[in-house]
Image 1 (cartoon, helix red, strand yellow):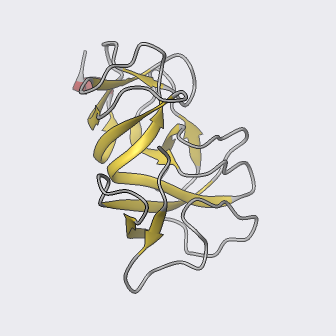
Image 2 (cartoon, rainbow, N blue to C red):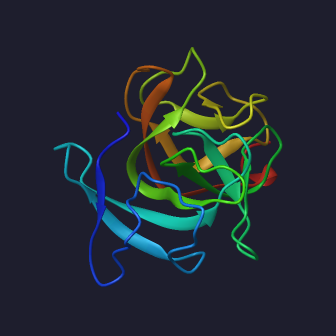
Length: 165
């Protein structure tokens, strides 16, 4: 489910989309368009180059800070822009995170296809259970769970307490 993303266009990076690196290969905050060359149903997506954090796994949902492009695992009551990790991009590393298109995210065990997405108490994991203040705007479920991941459709998702009180 993770995809085989390949950057396109003039800003194509030398760092593969699903790899993390101890060396910064792109300016932080760079956004590229990529196509999943291994899947007919994913098409194009949009990705941002960010700093990793301790214990990040593939598919974990993060909040990122546009001031320094650092990331934190998304957790209940968090606010800000949301992205999904394409690699195990840990502290002192750099990698790509998905912002739009169809991708795979770490989800809770009861997650259902076509549901709205919400932050949970489990860091980096989302669910479809309505939690006041934790609604992720512009993200919804797009498949059943497989190996703890489910496909989600997203368009620059974000969380703000006022979106769902």
